[in-house]
Image 1: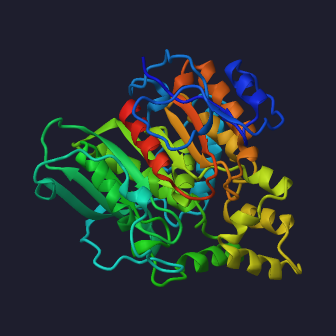
Image 2: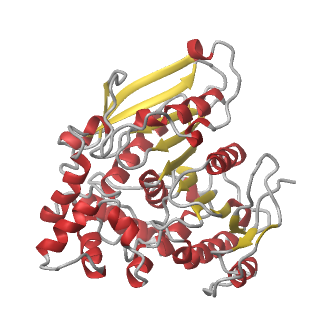
Length: 437
């Protein structure tokens, strides 16, 4: 029997964990200070116990592509969503309409242009870290003789819409191995101010194990940036003009188009496309999987948060400070002496409509069911506060249990960890993909 972690502690309420096991939906008060791990994945080696919630029953729902919930996004020739079952399809349709509302040209056909390796990747903010983090280098690898010679690298661009940002740089790695003909894919997404090349240690690790690994530069990052402030400049422009959505949503559009491309490749199994990402990349993974069911296994890392809860509970500061020039500009435009909850709410509504309301975590995360979903957070992460996720986790757990897929959902908050991806998180994500993809 497969084993998995069901941990209860610190930032997740004990009554909540019990309620999840009974399929309850209510929020609860915080538990005591102790942490207890009742079960642990067979291949996971942890220095510390993990905080988490999950359900212990087996799934009776298959993950094959024959399931109606694992088919691709259905739109008509104009890009408008076609009818499907409500209310799930209604929320996806509403979100897709938001994405379509700021597309430059819906008639641009998806196409591919040849690229080349990037010799000097663009890192914004403080620039490139001197060395890759321990977490980046920790992903399990398979020993492959002459790995470098067998590794195939593809660099290309997907044209997803007109304009400079409609050209998506893609880095794809795979082994030169004809068997099996169609392989599973893991899409990996970078955090703010970095680029696809930063992910190369992870890309190579997954490729060594037989996956096709793929990374893109998100909007205004990497090859899509011209200087070290391109992303922040785009955020400020979005607030001023309201014609783009550089915070999460525009990149989600690109990931829908990436799904189109991957599903059409002869070397890809279109029913086995996984997606993960760190921080901003975790948000991209979350929203892409919500709207596009072709992403069949999902692992957002330090990305999922409750935006509305943060506004209402005065916990918005850490997220706002990560892109502070945007909020300082909005503060000045609104005639405020300091950034406050009203400024934050107005900014989110302008640059990412619905993100802090109808598309927030408690509504969108449960709709990923029944596809395998692992949420990985730090228990002390101020940008993704764990208390704010209690209702979203509860609803998601109930959604998975209702479709007989409780074992396909897990939430883990690592004790003592803030906003950073850890070795444990990388290992948990790797195990999840090996198990379900």
